[in-house]
Image (cartoon, rainbow, N blue to C red; front, side, top):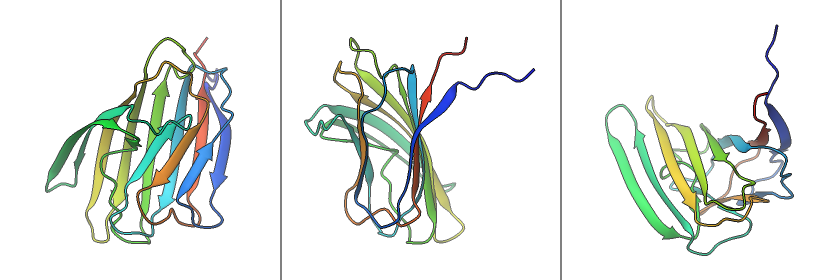
Length: 172
């Protein structure tokens, strides 16, 4: 007997023109968690992909990140930022290789706790090396998450970049 699916697509957006921001708004409050899955063609070198919640660009975000490419490791911590890194310090190697990431927000509709975001991703390098990254971020607000905005630090996310937001229901 197949198990019931607990993940439901809320919205999908595939870019038909390059964009520096993308917002998922009016997020329903009927799930326990949210998962954002992205496959992103990044055309700009040296670009970070960041995120903020509910239009909040105050200094309410903190996080830790690690990354590795098989020959080196990076790690870092940020506090009191106006955004969260989606996963580590996203640096595009060139404009043709895909950057992919997932972001998981637990207990997003709870109005009594701060929100935690776990993200993982890969950057395919211009050569045979790429990078795998993981990050944890905290949004210091007890508000329920009703919108998520993904943005670039410079440049744009390329045509064909696909973003899908899923709602996760508790298994019954």
